[in-house]
Length: 508
Image 1 (spheres, one colour):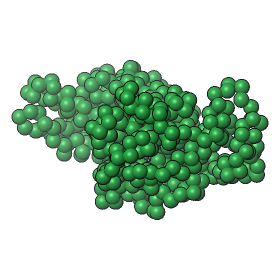
Image 2: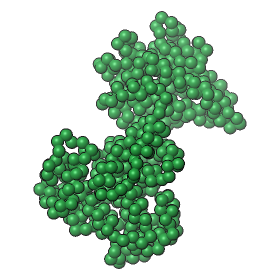
Image 3: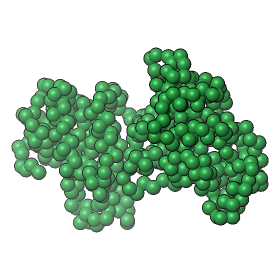
Image 4: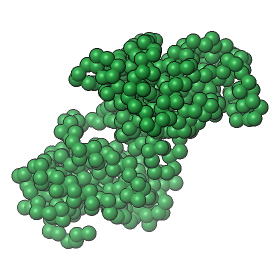
């Protein structure tokens, strides 16, 4: 931010500033020895704030079985940090909404802010963040710089009524007029208020996401805030453009967090379900029919074609499935650098653990070897760059046709392995046949035209009726089924059958 603009902002008397209660809350939050009694006294000074804290403690957001009857019970439910953060959110919104705008559309601004806060909180829950209330506050305040600019430069938003509803157009307009954007101004303002560094840094980066490095807790917090704004824009945007926007958001969520489409659909449902509660607590109307976007999200993002896969997926709501999803976010050292799927080293560790769990719990475990047919000919004819692109496309297809709880790994060369926990032989057969058909119908660009490549798959299933002695035995059976598929003409999926499978020629 330019020194001239900073000096101008500091000299203004109508610049947004936290009211007395909010200032006291900020001071309390910086005290490492803070006690519940002091927080209760600070909040209790404001009857309206006390009512809001009680309401949110008893809301669906926290889903407590026992109702909180007084402020101290609510503090026990929420915790000290959450109470302070929520109290700060309520007092800041009340104070900032009381100011008179110049050319800023306050109605749209506050609807977007509350939606973004709700989205940031929900993203945090979905991605394993632990600071839900701080995420709400950061999402809520990410555009606070717009209020500061509107009050300091009365004409900065003049004639931008339509532009304000397409948020991506606002930043270049601000930079052109002032040489700075509202994210930078908002971050500066929050530093003046002595808000925690995590909050103002998230606001500062709210319009840019760095996905080049592995996800850390600090990155995760900032990325939740950055994605919350576009989600809010989708809710507030025209209905006819929503389908495209949802698809683009799903792709962003996968790129930023590794979030699969099913999980993103559930996220949209969660946000929609919280909107009425947010409206009630902040005494404002955000969206007349949140159910409409929820239905669109279900239709566009929850479909995976196989009803059997959905049924099996519901059986996998255990610590193991959560662990599998978490593993998808782990360090890049467990990923194959070319295709982005897991590497062989990680596969061996994961499969050993899943085999032991399946044997212990008595649930099925399917393993499939996938091998591209005549792939050496592809490399020899069209070059290794074309071959690499086909390997990457194959990896995407395998991931796109498996569940969150499944693991896809590159075994070596043109070979991949899929591990499908809690999937019986019939389900695995359906998945494998769909992959064979999908890849056979896919055209790959090789520079001077396009080609189709086929895949052969052999799979084996560990179950109570068909047990294997070890992980190696299960892998060997799947590999033998793959060899049978090759001998049978390729481009097919074959289940291991001890009586019918072709003799083993080699085991990797």
